[in-house]
Structure formats: C-alpha cells, structure tokens
Image (cartoon, rainbow, N blue to C red; front, top):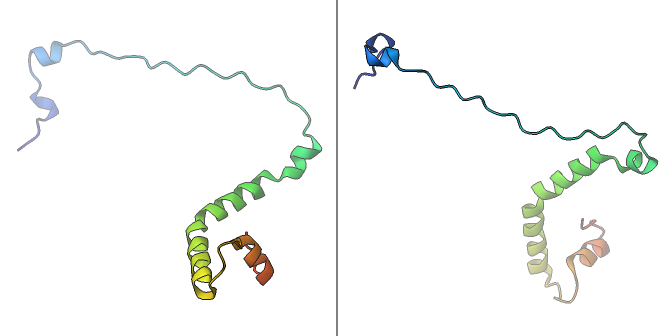
Length: 94
C-alpha cells in the first residue's frame, strides 16, 4: 500500500480551513522570596541523603537475599532481629 503524497491533495482538500488550537500554559507558581540558608539546611547534605536513599533502594533485593541466606545457614532464632544479628557479627546491617 502506497501512502498519498503531498502533491495528491486536490480540490476541497486544498480549500479546507486549517484549525489550530493554542495550548494554554499552566498557571505559574508563586515564587518564594530569597532568604538566608539556615545552619540546619546547610548541614542536611541533601545530595548525600538522596544518593544514600537511591543506593539503599537499588540494593534492597540483594540485601534481603543475603539476610535470608544468613538465617538459613545459621538457624537464626525468630526472636532475634536481623539488625541485631548483623550488628553483633560486625557487619553493619543497614
């Protein structure tokens, strides 16, 4: 099947009105006035916090598999939490 070319338009196709709709812009947000950065905001280290959160989310599955293997290998009692086990073993746990 061959697509029609631009030259194939004839008669009424050429006389039809062109409809163009102007897209509206979303309402703008009110901007916050400039202010001094507080010491709490400065010490928060947003970039490091975001990087650490992404790292934890990315490796959560592997961490769960490793924890399940540890429970299976050493028969960890159900009353003992994994965090306390890893901290006691010196592995961090977090």
